[in-house]
Length: 206
Image 1 (cartoon, rainbow, N blue to C red):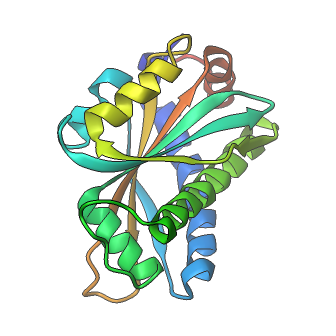
Image 2: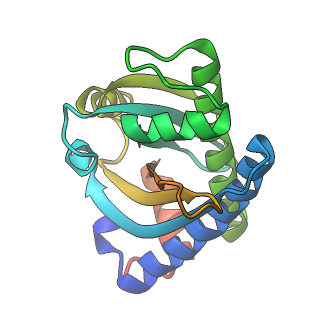
């Protein structure tokens, strides 16, 4: 059983779960920065992990990747990816700090890891409620590199797990109409057993 068997109904169910999780994350982020943040999930797709760099704009596109393990009653991994231009916008709104192109400083790294932790915790809380499981994220790790390199590292770590990812495209925006949306990709990479449990919860293998 793989994600490729998902029906439109199952994808809709996963999108609803994702919107609930991102709604919780929006509340947490708003409290973090003292300003309103909205999050929505415009699209959910399924892809081979090796094809993910192309979805992010190409293997050579510079991105920030935040990875976390899923711990608790089920296992898997989470990869959160922001294009460099979205990292610039995100940091300017979170810590009122200009992002330098060459490298991330300690404050920027810590802030982005916290964003990954908030998003992952909110998503896993919503998914865990559906599955009647306790799911918690590990400590986040961050990479600032080309999309191909970030995904290659994930593939090495997942050599014994599945090869497909559930990609939750995520938009961030505030209340001001002049604010440019921040784009992010939230990838859930469950191990085979966890994938079976998720598919059963959203209506079987289709």
